[in-house]
Image (cartoon, rainbow, N blue to C red):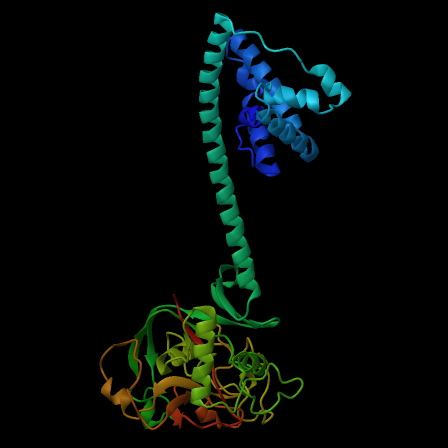
Length: 417
C-alpha cells in the first residue's frame, strides 16, 4: 500500500503511530537539513515531501483513511487495477483545494539524472535518518533523566508527607528533626565525639557511693532528644500501633512529658520509630545521658556547679509536671538538651550496677553499654517531687522494668549515622 510505504508504517498502524511517523519525516525533510545537498537532491526531497504530505492527508484522517483502504482493497480485486493511490484518487472525493494541487498524470520513466538524484537522495536520507535517530535517542535519554529526577522529587515530597520521618537539618545547627504527625515534632541535638568526667568526685558532699569514683569515659558521636518524649508524640505511637492509651491526655497537657510508661513501653516506642523512619532510635545509655547533661567538663548541674531552683522543676517548685520547654534555655545543658534535671525521671538503656564505677577506676572507658543484666534499669535526672540531691547530673538509681509511675518518662537517643 503505497501511502503506508511512504510513511514507513504498517497498514494496521494506529493514528498515533501515523502521526509520529509523519512528524519524523517532516523533520527529516526540513529545509535546514537540505542546505548542504545538491539542487537535484533538494528537488527530489521536496517532491518526496509532497508525496509524504499526500500520504498523511489520506491516512491522517480516519474517514479518508477508511476510503483509501477500501479503494485499495477494491483495486486488488481487479486484475488490471491501477496503482492503489491512483485508484483512491479517482474513487474518493477530495477537498477542492487539495484536488487542485495534486497531479493526476503518471510519472514518466526516470531519466538517468533522476535515477542519480534518487540514489543521492537515498544516501542523504539514510545519513539524516541516522543522525535524527541519534538526536532522538539523546533526547529520549535526557527525557528519561528528567523523568527520573522528577520521580525522585515526587518520592522525596511523598516521603516528607509521610509520618513519622526523621532527617538532619543543617540550617538548625545539625539537629535531627523528627516529625511524628502533622504539627507534632521534636529535635535531637548532636553530641560530639570526645571524653568527659562521669560520676562524682570527693568534693561533692551529696555524692553517693554508686557515683564514685569519678572516671573518664569516651563516647562516639550521637544524638539526644532536646526534650523528653511528650504526650502528643506518644499518642502518635499509640495510634500508629493501635495500642490502647492507659489514660486520655488532659487538655493542655500535650507538651508535658509522657509518664506512666514502663521500660518496655519506652523500648517499644523506639523500635516503632526506628522501623518507621529507617533510622536507629533507642534509649540513651547511662553514659550518653550523663555526658549530654553535664558536658565534657563534668559540671554538677546542667547549667553549672551551683544549685539554682529557678532553672528546673524540682524541689521548691509547683509540685507537678510542667511542659518540657518551661525551663529552657535557662536550664539547658552545654549541648542544648533541656529538662534533663527535674520534671520527670528518665529511663536509660543500661541495667543498674552500684559497683560499676569501682570497676572502671583509673582507666578510660569507651562507649560503655553497661552491665549485661541486673535487678532494674537505670533512671536519671530526678523529678518534680525529688529532693535537690537527686536532681544532680551524676545521681543514679534504678527502677524495675515493669514500673510505671506518674513521674517517670523517657527521652530518645539516635545513632549519628
